[in-house]
Image 1 (tube, rainbow, N blue to C red):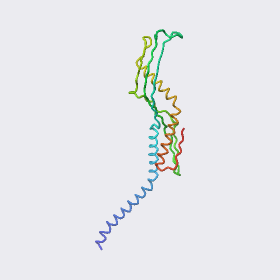
Image 2 (spheres, rainbow, N blue to C red):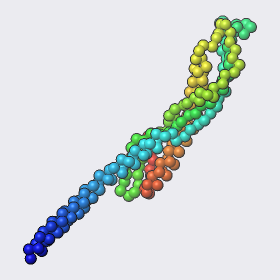
Image 3 (spheres, one colour):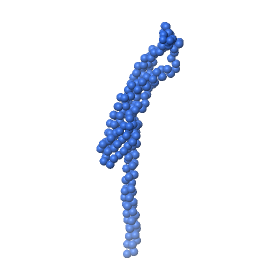
Image 4 (spheres, rainbow, N blue to C red):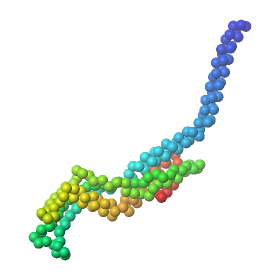
Length: 197
């Protein structure tokens, strides 16, 4: 009988410890459900922000800039092309357009509402290796200064962006809608409502 008591006590202790561990494990699962839900929501928001930070449209363009400038005395140009300068510049550039995340909201029925900023031009970038300058003509009274070419190119790039802004914005919004809707469907959401503000 004494031998049984010796073995019974350690076995009961081990079973008791095992039962306590199982109960603690189940309680941990019970209380961590909300925490995991918030974490998943945060991860989804971070992923959408990363998607939105990427440009959703990229316009590549090449421009030929034919520039001329002539000094005038009153309303009359100087004779013999004195005071006249001109150049022909060819360059390539690209415009990135996109939208930024404002808010992300989940509903109970498996749908999601995402608020994005209206489409916008994110950047207008000159491809420096593409700049070619031809037919530079200048006069002693009207010379090209260092950096004049870059000023001309920057002005032309701004003008191109302004002329094409509506199309870039529209395409950026369409692409953002398609990209985010597909992404949310891959995560299992039934419907995605996208609102541009």
